[in-house]
Image (cartoon, rainbow, N blue to C red):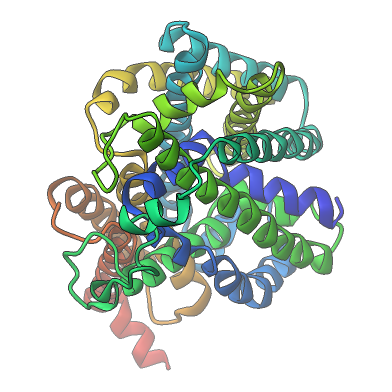
Length: 443
């Protein structure tokens, strides 16, 4: 595959209905703090393109985790693949849950029905096609997705109040830029979002996504050569920046429309779920066809993530776990499994935090142990198979506990904390491993 399909597929694979609603919801509720995470796409792309891609290009892997068996042992490879499956299956189920809620709000149908329709549809066409079909479908879905976002932004801003600059500034929706928020530069880790938490946390999350996630790295392996894969990654960075910037503008417009309609007072905090309700209200004012385009864009965002996830999880099960099922049967089982999980998640997640908090606490936080194992396999020569295996297990357990019980922590720091905890456990367990002394003597 060439640069264009690889780059666009990387972008839409990581972009789902979660992002579609999480960014406007975050901006309309808290301001522009989140935009400081957008340049990290380019910061993370440099080590991935210069170090990760050449490293794995030489190995000619089917899955990222194959090299861990040669470096450590088969059980370390299986642990990493299990972490990937746990992380990605949870992420896909949450994406289906969010899509079901959004589509139910637009159509009036039951959210359970919408989740089932999205999951089953993505499963069917993924079973019928292969990796090439998934990638080219992603490209087409990106066009629908971007058109839906552009249409929503244009029509949302068309009816905004004339005094929009004053409303945004006085309402605090241009913070931390105007008025400048001095606390944004604070080192206090308990603040919801600071420059340091955004930079470090987003870097850890993006390094996991682009350097340890089979779904994304499978696109590198599908490229014609190393140069096409590298160009595709940079194209992904620009496409992601464009889409997220437009969604930020949509978030500001949603706030202005809510104030104009008298739903909230200027400067008042937005209740959870307001962004979706306001977006549905806006769609009723769109010209015929454009509200359908927006819904199609949301649907495309989810489908592109689910089909890619099903394909990559099938590859991991078939290659790493040596599952002997037929590939289509395996994809069918995974697709129906995440659809069922999405249906089960509906009640608990309805009572949960905002989508933005879910992304950073659960999704990004649980990916960090996987990055720790892959990075140690690439760069560490003093870690042992037993140490990494035990450290990875302990890191996963601690990540689950820390994500669940620690609330007074900046949202982006969960990814950093879980990464450091897993690295620490792996290094400590390797140091305490008796085989380490033997290795030192041989050296």
